[in-house]
Amino acid sequence: MIRLENVNKYFYKDEPREVHALSDINLIVQEGEFTLFNGPSGCGKTTLLNAIGALDSIDSGKIYLDETDITTLSEQARTELRLTQMGFVFQSYNLVPVLSVEENIGFIMKLRGFSDKEIKQRVLEVSSLLKIDNKLKLLPNELSGGQQQRVAVARAVAAKPKIILADEPTANLDSKNSQILIDMMRELNKKEGMSILFASHDELIMESARRVVELNDGILVDDNRR
Amino acid sequence: MYKLILKMAWKNSFLRPARTLLVITMIAVSMSMMLAIQGLYDGMVKNMIDKNKRSGSGDISLYAQDYRVEKDIKYIIKDALKIKEDIQKLEGVKAVVLRLLADGLLSTARKSSFASIHGIDLNEEEEFGEFSKFLKQGEINLNKRGALIGIELAKTLKVRVGSKIIFSAQDSSGDINSIALRVRGILQTTNVGLDTNSIFVDIKSLHKFLGTSSKDATQIAVMGEDEKLLHVVKSNYSNLDVKSFLELQPMIKQMQEMMVIFNSITFFIVMSVVFIGIFGVVYVSILDRIREFGILLGIGMQYKYIRVQIFLESIIVGLIGYLGGAVLGIVFLVYLRDYGLDLSSFSDALEMWGYEAVITGTIKVSYFTSTFWAIITASVLSVIIPLRKIKKLNPIEVIKAEK
Image (cartoon, rainbow over all chains, first blue to last red; front, side, top):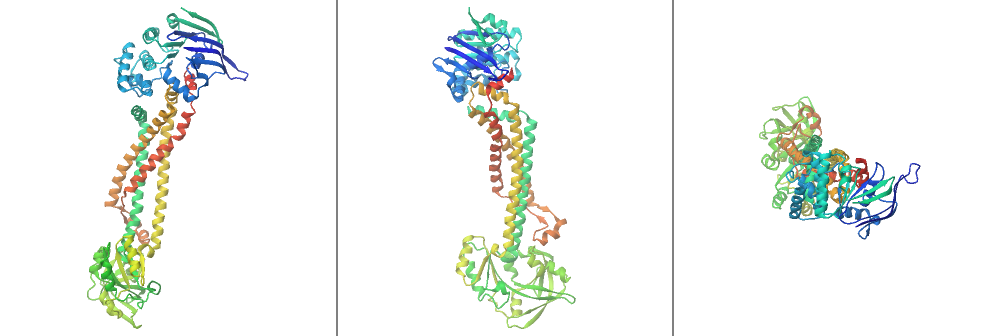
């Protein structure tokens, strides 16, 4: 479970151009939720996602992952937390260009010390779910954008983290590939039971999400469960 | 994990193959040149030392006390023959010769010059230092008052093979005597002292001329490089003036030290080039991939793994450069050892300083081991600054920049 209490985040604090990016955000995300942070550009959805993902710091408030306050952790502990508890999907895929699809998918598992046998088994399982099991020996630059993003999702979910954080994962994809990706992520959410948090203004994701958290100027304006 | 990191490092090293190959070539060529220069420097000194030992002092020389100062045959080693036989029995001794030296005046019908006459036994000298290899013109023959003359002295007196010369000197009883000799051969030892003022005659004839006992000698030269041997000879013959080669030739010791300095400077310059080359390729490669590193840190890869990866990338480039340099270096060094570098056009200047016109190189394992460690060190040091850049990297900045 993720719990946010009075989270505030400023950019350019105490400068004339100060921006109040997150304003007193209070939110609870239960395990296994398929949640979208929605809102116009600059509303704070990515900032919120980065704060939950222990990538960015906040100025005040608390963010709990289960019972751990992640805002008090050291940089090394945050890195460890990201590795063990979270999976990230970025807009630009960000795969390791010199590693094959198979190695990219197993990368986080390798970092976490899983055995080669476990990694191989899990890579096959996830790649099959995401329909890239016939691309395992290829390099990322030999894949289409949609396929690369599926590899990025596979990498994020392979080590079975508690939360998947996906920032604009469909921004570089056409509508067909976007739909395929969203369907696959829903499928994963159902099968693997991990929480998936999106930051996006993509209509397709909005249609699929079971919970939509609306943000505007850093303020949580609506929280709609379907 | 480290296997995967090694794979990433290897592949990233050749992400821009032209750039990496250029640096590898630069390392290999500069290293091979450095090895060749080291081999030549050492070869020059080694050849000079070798010729000086063979033609002059050997590894150890024994003189009567005060002989080297007075240069008078009254300071002769008595019963040198017995000492020679005793030294021959010592461990580590390769050869021993007796020599009789006297200073005097060497004249032709038109010219005269100061000269040192060396009484030698040709057979023993051949065994001691392949004496015949110093012959430049004529033949090695000391029969019938035959004499061999240093090349520079021959030029001074304008004598040729077959010329008659007169050597005058004070004998053991203090009388001035002269002996007529015929030049049978002209020698070039590259031992400056010998080439400019020495003639060589049969030791028995010289004993007769100087009125000294055939059992005596002014110098006993010993070939045998063992440090222990020097110590034993010094302690056994404390009544004599026993000197090692380098004690007799302090100039050569200085030259050796100078060559070490030259080699060190060359080494430093080449390693600086290697350092800059590796630094350049690693730094640019990191700048190219700064986003990748930020993302890797963002998804939870620990900095220590990235550090290992960067070190490996640098070491891979350094090691391949080293291997290329070592192979090229061996080719150069073997060529220089077998054929030498012909500097005949500078022969006058070189021979004046005791060097040969054709310089042959030496090959030492230490050239390769020291270069190996230097390249590894340069590889490791060259990534420190690029690593600091990654360490300061905030993943969120990279992720934001991406958007």
